[in-house]
Length: 212
Image 1 (cartoon, rainbow, N blue to C red):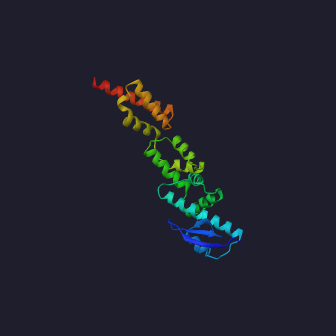
Image 2 (cartoon, helix red, strand yellow):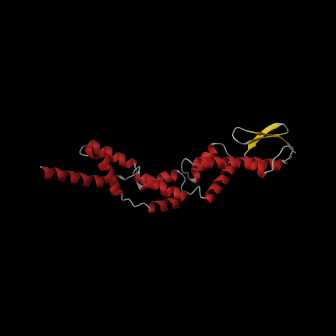
Image 3 (cartoon, one colour):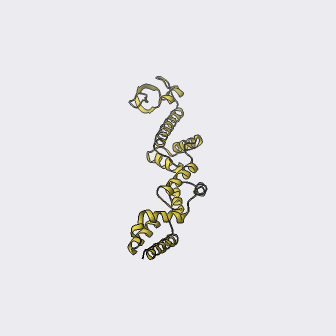
């Protein structure tokens, strides 16, 4: 059986393990104490494999907590991030399940906050919000629940955007095309945009007639 012949502290605050004189891997101090690792101890191949897995799990979990300190993640987003950093698929799934259990990963809460921001800050339509949440791995049920909580009126959103961003050029055909294309990129349908735009242009014409 492999024998733990040397323990050496690392600059990262971990402990490097040497088995039979050769470096194997490093572990965090919690795992060191939990597994009762000390020089001279022998581990079976099964125990060594278990130790490797526990070490990778702790590293992946610590990395996930670090990432969550900067922004929110869906389960899918976190899974993809950890896999890109070359943690094993089994380990990643264990971390995802644990973080979900603890409440750090909650796709519905993510969908609720994200959809509100996308509508209020980026002025996305519901259909565009749906596309974004689907891309980020949120399940359809959570998306539907999040969208039902939004209290916006598409027509009001379109009018607000037209007045704030495109108003000065709406009297020109080129300006209208630019406005329509911009709003369609936000996910609004041509029909919705055209209806609001026609109302605004009629309003504009009425104002001009009154001035004359």
